Amino acid sequence: GEVVAGTTGTPRHAAYTCVGGPVNAAAALETLAAGGTRAILIDGTTQAAVAGRVATDAMTAAELRGKKAPAAVHAVRTT
Image (cartoon, rainbow, N blue to C red):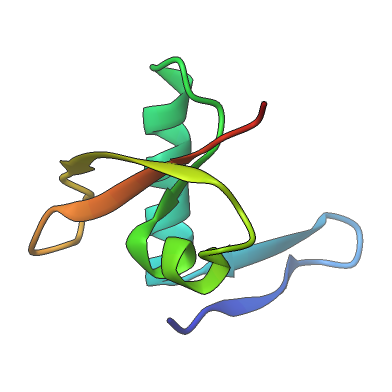
């Protein structure tokens, strides 16, 4: 999906930020990971992109804020 990234603020108090649907989805997956036993969670789109190169385990689909349907969630195997 599309993301808008750039610097906001003044030269003295500048911050780099990103906004967009993929950023929101990543934040929601980060929150899910923090409450569980798996450190790295990715969505179905990312899993499809890394299939065959990164080992993952399918998890229960999750409701992500701003999404109409539950999102596929995969945990990256770290060992």
